[in-house]
Length: 158
Image (cartoon, rainbow, N blue to C red; front, side, top):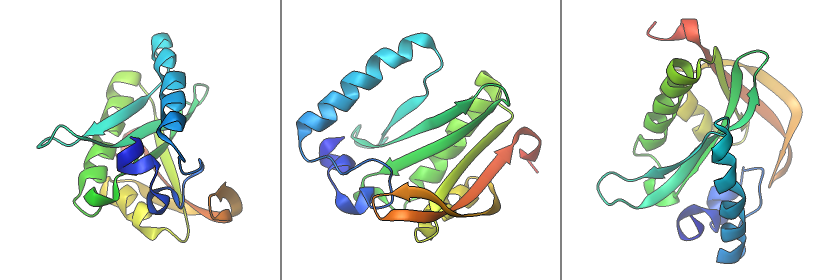
């Protein structure tokens, strides 16, 4: 994680968590994540490159809204694998799991308006654009406009 994406300021540029400054920062984060899996309501996956077995990114539910059966997603991946269609593939697989196994009705994600490539991932995964929330987010670039995309259960296979 540290070597492949968390320490790369280009990968973390539009993320809400800071670029990791040492492998120890990554180890502390992973130590926090691991016990969360025990309750069954924590959804955070490493992405493994099929050909090499190398961990190249992660995708997770950032916020789960049990009352409305919805989730907001986040994802990031090693720059070496950008543009190969891997993140849309991962997002589709995770959405399928969240709809079919977890039973959610809505899966959404947002991106900084200055990072349209992330929005393209959402569109390739079948999410529909919903709108722009002005000055609604904050990431490593500062306060930003968020562009939201979502898929609801009834959108699937249309």
